[in-house]
Image 1 (cartoon, rainbow, N blue to C red):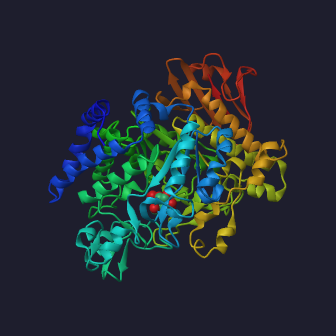
Image 2: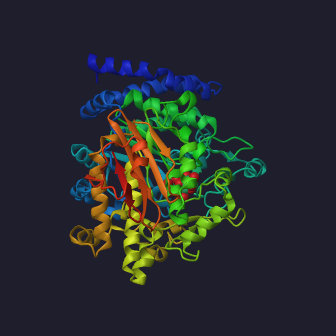
Image 3: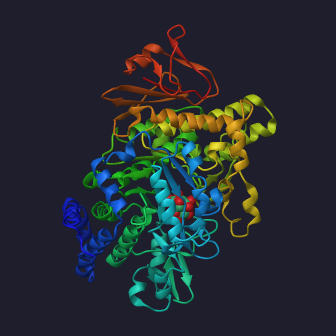
Length: 628
Ligand code: GLC
Ligand code: GLC
């Protein structure tokens, strides 16, 4: 195929735009590798080929997003995250639910792992054996392209997972390695004996201490130890090998050309290994991620990257581009700290830690990037609160983490929550938590007790969380089932492939009968209150231009310890968002709001003026207000 002049010029312009972003990193990472020159040349060819093959409508989208590079920072972005089978059976089923997505106001969907996984337990699809095929349970690549096209026609962006830290043991590269192919063996981290693994283990952490202890697995066919950070069937790729970079770059562009808008780069923290470290978030990880980002900027600029790094606050920020990578790395990264701090403040009814962490570790504005904000997802919650941060507000790290663990299992006296432990590490005493939003927020215990006030509190906590992620700045992600307040689902215990992994308790099948009930139910129905409440929040988000993620955001102190507040500082005026993390009525002086730039006391979330009572703004239990 010959390119038109126009297309050729565009490619060249974009190559020049990002040449240094890509090749400076590529060179620094790989120039001592014997395959350097050859892979570098191939990379240019691969990008050009992908661009030639890119469908015209996607090329127009590239143009549109080059012209509107802030598209993903706008307040009309509302995300929805689901497992294809749990939500709609298969890809055709998804086509049948597009009206539902639109009704929810969704403009971004994350189809959870949809590439072909290994047979049997595949870690929910995160153990991929073929990056170029769709999971046959869900359909074919044609079906996938149809879904992508249908979403695009409705203005909904499509996010899928690219698991690039590891492949399944059954992936062709791993299979070839097992057959003795030395080139493919160099795609992984293999060890003849335990000498090096034992040395590395000294400083490594455990991701799945219960069901996949240790970071290495002995492979019988190879008679070697394989680096497997996650499950034994997930083989870590060797990113020190430029061939791996080239292969994954090709995969990225292949998927981009199928109509993907957002690539969720899975478990990126673990991509680079260095003896004596935790092998997480090493500087090379950011170099690789910047280079991958540049590849897309050149050959499919409509596509952006969401980086999944569930790490401490200081460690997370670089995934959005810091220092030399400023503006050049992830466009999106999960705001894990916001999520953790939400649950922490909800349990303690005290926002001091939240305010301090979010203010000290995060900048007021990000360049070419924003957060993916969420309260629940398909994974567990790890209590990522550092000792230093806890100490700064008069707590201890160990004590506070232990408290959160007890609170969210429901063991702590008076706790409203009902969760279940995940990733218990006997050695370190750490443990994480699984559970649905509604169950962790107290709805399950409230419904059991039949206490109507408690039910209302549960509903309010769920709405508080959604109002927070809608207002924080970034793309709020609604996790499937949370919008109808689905409770924990213990049925995974009957599936032998899932019993070992309690995260399945919050990965239920969508309850469509409950959706119907939620649409029509009144004030007596918690699912109706939650569903209609979330829909209203997202509708109001879109009508609130101050929530564009490009504006500086300040976390401010509040007069009450149970209140959390942030201010969006925009040329058109200030938006002060206030959240009450307690079950008590409280108030703030109107003067206080005015001193933070609020002008006409209009409440943007309810779209009503605020009436002062004796000069104060009254705040109901779990109130959420956006004042302009
Ligand atoms: C990601 C996924 C998680 C999975 C892990 C290994 O972090 O979110 O579900 O277990 O990667 O692929
Ligand atoms: C840890 C990892 C994260 C992974 C999760 C799986 O938090 O850092 O990448 O998704 O475990 O539950």
